[in-house]
Length: 153
Image 1 (tube, rainbow, N blue to C red):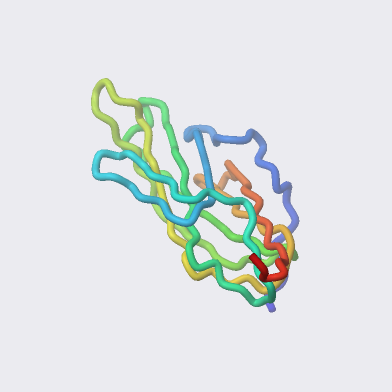
Image 2 (cartoon, rainbow, N blue to C red):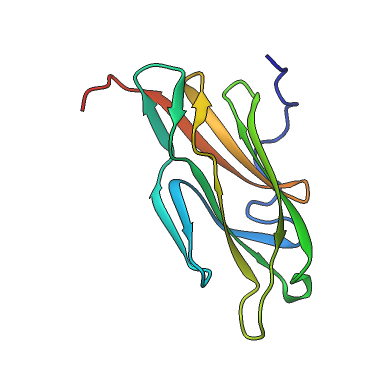
């Protein structure tokens, strides 16, 4: 098993934004639907998942976020990284991509983003964390609790 990630402050220096990008919302949910007009549907937001035994698979699993930039930064390319960290600090999953926020005159420079992590396997109970970085700077940490259930109900 790989060594845990280096210890760093899990809380971002200034929650919700880096120097140029503001994170207006972030959720973990089952499904994110992005409409052709930029509207977003967030289906079943959650902060905990339950398994009677492990390993377990989170069959429906998405990250959803809303990002805003200043007018001067519209059209600029930002690098976004989303990491899933297990309770021992090990990296389970990492997604990397580009965020380019465009806007028309009179519109807010805002972008909704949904990334699918369906099928993620978890090996132990405890607190997992979804870290969100923009251009290498942490803007958000979302806790996800993996809990034991008796399987009844």
